[in-house]
Image (tube, rainbow, N blue to C red; front, side):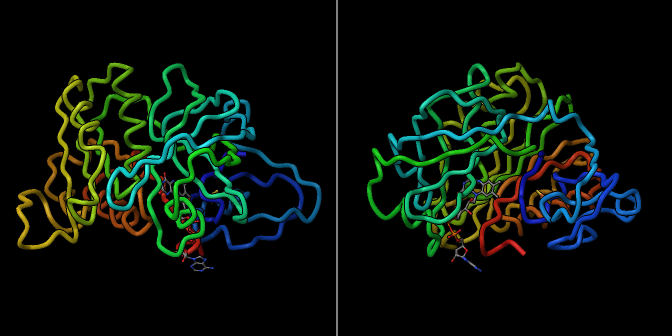
Length: 306
Ligand SMILES: Cc1cc2nc3c(=O)[nH]c(=O)nc-3n(C[C@H](O)[C@H](O)[C@H](O)COP(=O)(O)OP(=O)(O)OC[C@H]3O[C@@H](n4cnc5c(N)ncnc54)[C@H](O)[C@@H]3O)c2cc1C
Ligand code: FES
């Protein structure tokens, strides 16, 4: 079943209830349009079957990725910046996935999986060695465990791939906006676009707290140098010391959107904290970008789910 957030906020799991009865954990009306509700659409992740059901999807299930379970061993976990680790896992067998998708990881002794986006584009559509960018959430069970000590050699359970956040087949300019470790799937998507020989202009807005929270700068520069069209990279710092030597942009990563020329023609890819994405979506729509041209991946956690 196609899904992303599993908490009734993204709408990816919408299905048409043709026959049967369901109960709802949270009302589909919070996400779906009035016309969709009237046509019988509901959210699968919020639906409890109360009878046998007949349902219809908007795309054939055969087009969805096959989710499988894997065992992964941590082979490296270097710090990429002050609060992000580059988690490298070696799997028991190759996993097929599309850039932009994510996997669910479960650590021993920690209840329930946590989702992490693949941070690279696989060469032939699959990979056995995976990399994730994991940001430390103080007080968070999985990230406290990972950052607490060297976990090299530790086994994790992994299932995936999940998610509908992907590169779209288009020639429109790309406006990418990432906050913190939200850069991971954006890098994967841009790597894929470069490998496909994309000639689309790119603007990459990247939000971090301070210079110590910036990472992937060399990889971004390599992408920019190899890109076959204009590629503008704009790092934006929200908490950099006013007296520091930083000469780049300051403030919220969403603020430069208003100054970009011709946003309405762009296709937007947004990834990071939910509040950042909500603000970016509102700004983009205010500047004429149609909702269908905005793809977003919200890094929801237990503090942000309803
Ligand atoms: C599709 C998707 C992709 C993601 N990809 C990435 C990625 O690539 N990189 C990345 O760094 N993160 C990513 N995330 C976020 C990630 O899945 C985790 O949520 C995050 O790492 C925190 O996990 P944790 O176990 O450390 O924290 P958790 O233990 O889950 O806690 C998270 C926060 O919630 C608070 N909290 C816990 N329980 C409650 C409660 N009941 N009520 C209120 N607050 C509570 C905790 O104190 C903490 O601040 C992604 C999320 C999604 C949904
Ligand atoms: S609304 Fe169901 S998966 Fe997001």
